[in-house]
Image 1: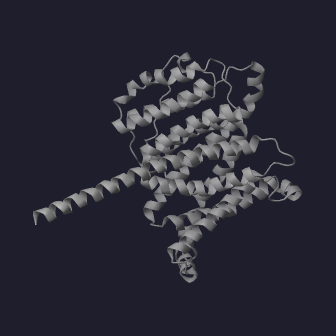
Image 2: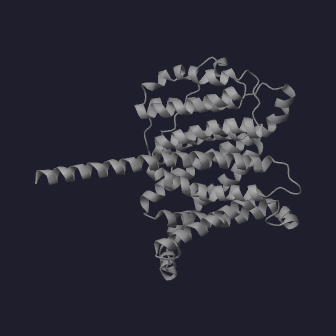
Image 3: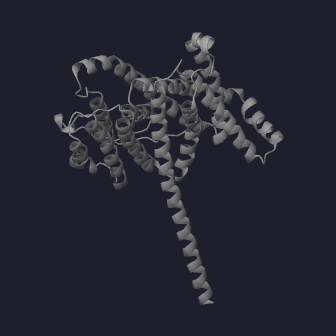
Length: 388
């Protein structure tokens, strides 16, 4: 009898061990997916908007419309699978949860409209900014999300967390400084970089407000992931068509909807469509800390690829600083360690190194400034991931 109990205990322990190992595999696989999706999307989008083309370049507004349409198809296909491939059951679910609840469905109009604006701004910003600068600057959405969460959800944020957000602003400001190239080059690129910066800032405001608005909405109404995204994608698709007709009517008349499309364009659209789905599913197995690591690693990879593949970043100092700067930054981050839990300290380090890597690779040494302002933190507010 005792032997049987011991065997049961051993089997239970083995099963627990297997489950934990599978959880770890899923966690780090999720990390890999997030890094690949984020880095590839930004770099390919940047390349698609700057590569030399014969004839007209593809319309970014039409790409947004295509992505929203594919999101609808994807979500409907998943719902069909959930309903056992029964078309009548699918139609009944859509009728009951979408069509027969017009007031509740209409509440998704606001975030869908903001996401549509945000997606169009993404294309515009990456037409003017290199991928690494865009990714670092876009981290200001952490600040806007924190501000809207305090205003709309009445959340409390500690002084240390606000201080980290201020450091985030300073770090982003350092990225916008002249690269040390010739004055003529800086003067020529200045207006374009300013417009790109404005586009990113507007996108950050949109991201912060829409994320908190949607979070508040979902606390009041319980919807499935796929119904929610169908509602968002339908409104995004319709609003995207309106935006395309208003902004690109003349180009549509001349070249048509699919003008300038090539393999790279379709890859960007597919990454936008399915990338958000992959990330939203991946975050289920990971956590916000792991997502912070993934974002930081993606920024570092984008910096390296922007320099070595796209030629966007041109260093003006020796590359030795790229190796030395992260080591120096570890000392600068010591002052923040006492403010965070051990797992949060890791996120501080990773975000700081990513910012510093961009600074060093663009020829700007962070210690040229008087204060120690390179640390950021990405765990202040949960960053909800949606397909749209």
